Figure: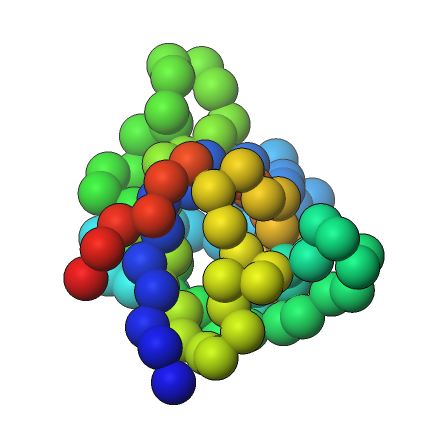
Length: 105
């Protein structure tokens, strides 16, 4: 099983109170990532560790966060790659994002 690390821009969904559904920080949070294969249209889910260097938005006043994704699997590269879109789940969908670059371990 191969390990992968990516940087991604994530927009967290807002909960009923107006705050993001999930809190991100430097400590990794275990979530579920749903990726899609661009050629076949098939989806695959993975357990992912999501961390963020700081809790501030990517741009002041914005809702996006620059995060690090860590995941493992034999077919990850088929469903998650630079430019691919994905959804994050934590009991329900908490956000969506796009992979900006691969970080080599």
